[in-house]
Length: 159
Image 1 (cartoon, rainbow, N blue to C red):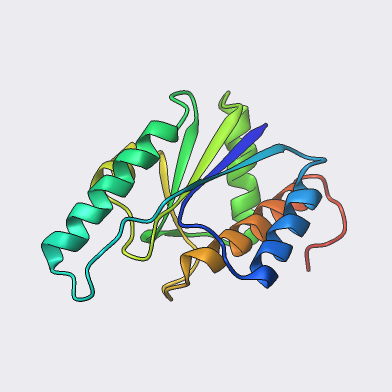
Image 2 (cartoon, one colour; image 1 turned 30 degrees about the vertical axis):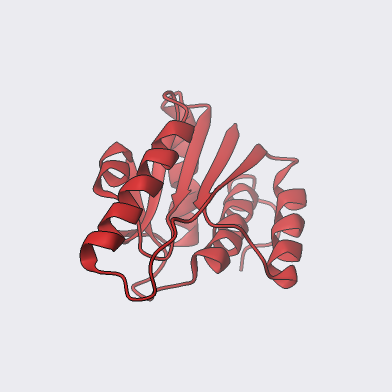
């Protein structure tokens, strides 16, 4: 299995970089993992709704260019379906049973994802009704991917 995490914005905080590095190391025995960072669109100080929409469109175009056409795409968005860790693990397992060898998780920028990216997604996933910083979301996603593999293999970790 190959996993791509396509994310808008880079990680600046050392503690988040350290967590990402740790989960990358933990995931490697189960799957190849590729993190693709794309630049966040610049906005003026007081952006209009049109400015925000334009930025999301530009980011969406960059995201769509990076998605492997054969990948199963999971967009992280607040209107997505919420799953337990067990159900998330089962979903990943089912995706592989369906014949996909690559999963692309999409994390948008601070303004979210364009409609085109959401339409390309095979599944929309929400981790909570709460909003999380997109940099922190990368860590949360990686932890859940690691947990999912541990659950699939009945290995200790999940409680």
